[in-house]
Image 1 (cartoon, rainbow, N blue to C red):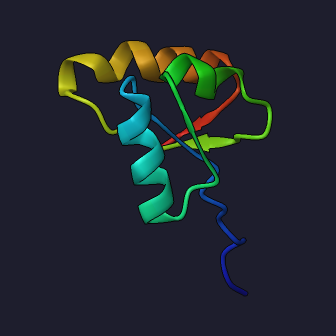
Image 2: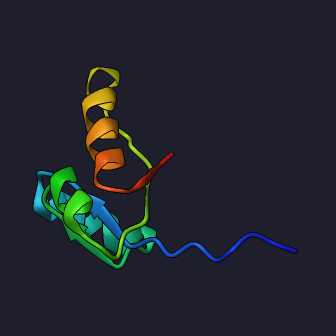
Length: 71
């Protein structure tokens, strides 16, 4: 029995043009302007946080509060 399929739904970046380019290059369905937009998106169930260490905790806590699984 294998793992369930993973669908790269969104990448978030305050620099929208950079986010859109990264989404296109790495196969994400869309780019969002912030991690808050990720938290608000009901279609996103799990999130991998890739930011500086000092930002991990507040983002992780907010994502968990929004019902997301955090990697």
